[in-house]
Image 1 (cartoon, helix red, strand yellow):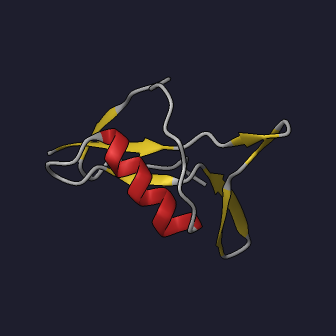
Image 2: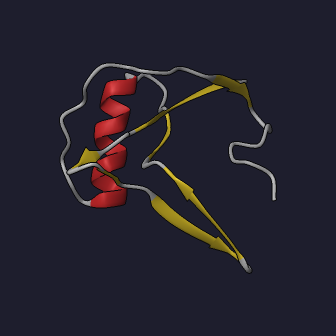
Length: 79
């Protein structure tokens, strides 16, 4: 199955908002967002993800990058 996701690049006062995740001794950062739900646009998906992950409403601008991947591929960099 081909999957798509949306991520938010949130910039304020020259700062970028990222989520920090910890796996054991390894920390990594990701932009807020997530996989697209069936029947939902990337725009609507991003609004939902920002509400869920950040408890904020955002204004969605233009799409600046797109990527599709096959189910089962890694969605984050390897350790």
